[in-house]
Image (cartoon, rainbow, N blue to C red; front, side, top):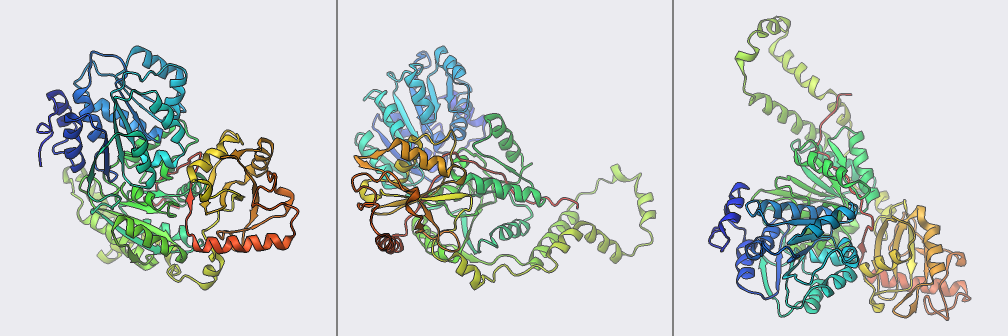
Length: 612
């Protein structure tokens, strides 16, 4: 393997890399850096999360940038402010010995006037989220006419989050002569569409196989029910005393709930979510990096930009709705040559989704059993015993106290002393697991309760919408359509199911009526078709893929035979037939994609048992 010097980087950059402890380039860096330096051709680069993509595109840009020119020469787009901030910090570290190089990071939720002032003072590199970047372009504060490099980092996630229109606006503000660099960890069809629409005969490089998982990560699955999901999470934490992990949830509400429960139960946990200010987010992340927080509970979006190399575990409290996102999640562990474990807590009906993930990552999941109380107690006890056994004794520091200590314990035998020591450490722990049930006994009652589709969030209202794949609807477009109705400043969108001729989506139940009113009053159209939404009523157990629609009181937008293509005056038997037809289609289409428009994340659970 070559060194960074061999890749053609100038001495100031190499010196900064040495200060940071960079010794050898990763595979993606070794391939991308000389390609970008030696050619102006567009580039598609695919590499797993944690393989050094930021350095792969930023180092060759720094090598070629003109420090004497204060115009913006490079624009780097990322899907989240956390990732944008991380990229900006990395570039500042890499350019430590380039005194005339200026980088600024722009993102929503931060003072835009201060960002404008920085741009006016002159910067060569701008890192930003799509929304804020477009806002600055519209205000004429950000001018991209001299841009030589456009980087789309985590391009797949930007499309998933509905940023296509923003990407179009940014691209239209850049010159055709620019070099476009697309970096992505997964390779869905939408990323290919970016390459076709925005790139000119791009060169393609990969680090390993596209979409495949890291060889340093072991994948495990645990069968749970909704009733046992959280207890299983606790047991996995307790069975791994040195755990340092991220727990992934699908919605901010679920994330906050899991984090609150872990904190309540004495774990070292905190939350990270979209309602926090940037200062609060930075504070939580600083605690996590210092391991004051041992586990961070997060949604997919907020976890982007978390740059921690020594995570022991990634735990999927629930699987992502897009199976490609599993690769993003698991890639947060097993980084920088370390080994990691990615765990999926799944119900029996989700085993088919595990097979889909296995095909994508080209790795097999190990079927594991939730640890029993006895196994956990044994693990915890021997962990502390090993720590005591390996503790170095500083005799000179404690020598003056030892005679009094010996006298205090003189009436105890060796066995009694050990028993008291173990009891002092583990009385609460042993009591909790004394009569603990076996969580691997997945009862038929739980199966019956959850039969028929994904688990429903009781805090969400499920809506039917008369658009599907045949209308060119996808999750990003549906999120955009919902956001266009301006229901409220922040509305959480839950599960999204896109089928052929219709779809379903979930909205925070507190905004149920506001959602109905917004669609009714706005009378939106989608590609010339009137939009009809209705509240669905779930099947028993919450959550089958297809609920039953409620009565016509909540239906609207069905103009000139819109909606399902039938008028609302049809009989209830007609509704029943349509519901049956949709159920058939749903059973044959097992496709669902979930999004959260206001992403809320939460923090870790490595256990630190509090005295009770």
